Length: 403
Image 1 (cartoon, one colour):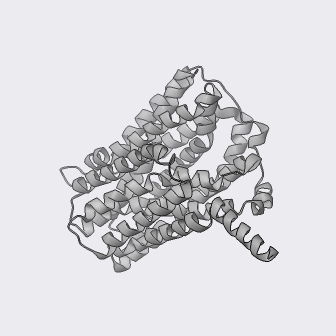
Image 2: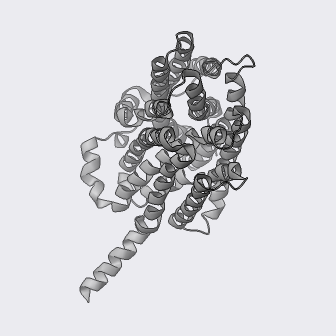
Image 3: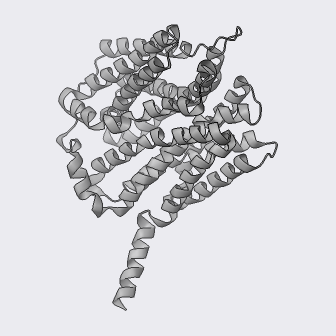
């Protein structure tokens, strides 16, 4: 089994940087609330600026990949991510929240380009039968970025003098990205392009969607999932600080534990799914999520920090499993189905502001009703609106009509 190791390794370091940038949102939100003395609703514009790009740019990015190839597109992604990180420096100098949001939007544009281009490019870096191995290997780097960021970033942001240096982790990240850019330019990475089958129109997608009801409902499930994930992680540290009186350093350790649980369960799910149907696993784990949410909302057990971290155990399997349930048996429509599910990531922009407004009015513990509601919708989808339950109901309906 052959792999092109040099471009693969470079992409893996980019995956590491992307994992760090995603996790930084969860550290940035509570630190900026403290620094700018603003409401949680205002602070959730971080998530809004980050996730809104998923509904703005996917099709222009697909056009760019088709015309300029994967190498140029990935270099563009690196450029936008680096520029976004560097803009945090003037944001700190001028003490401007608007510049922070601008930096996040530009950075997220780069991540969106990366997400659209990276996985198909990985598939081309060697034998087709090794594509899944390469993708999972790269995802390990992203998971490493998630798990290591909370403790390190918190230590970098909160100085002993009391100054909140929110720009510092991004400045260091910009250095890492610049090194990757230089290595990309020096490496002989093939300039492959997307095939014609990968290019499609919005009109074409929605014209065919009615044929796949489980995909239609799957898009909404993904919308709720990404919203729940952004809410859960984004308000993780505020919950520990406001409800349990943890320091930022103490809270960051439990956020690290949350991401370690998520990564471990993601790996374990590979074996669990051999014995349990995917929609059943999502439904059962959804019930587990709801129970954990209700505990941290309404009870003080003395172990609430562990219930909060345990959410990672159930959440770790959700994105890939929901994605696979959405595109199940859609055949040649799979590329367009993937685009629709990627559009649904905009849920991360929609739900955090609602949770922020509830936090300002009723407290951060009550605000966790928002992701709890999201997982109620996901659980209903898993048990009733994935492909197999829909087929069973259609079969029973046809039998009833026939009789």
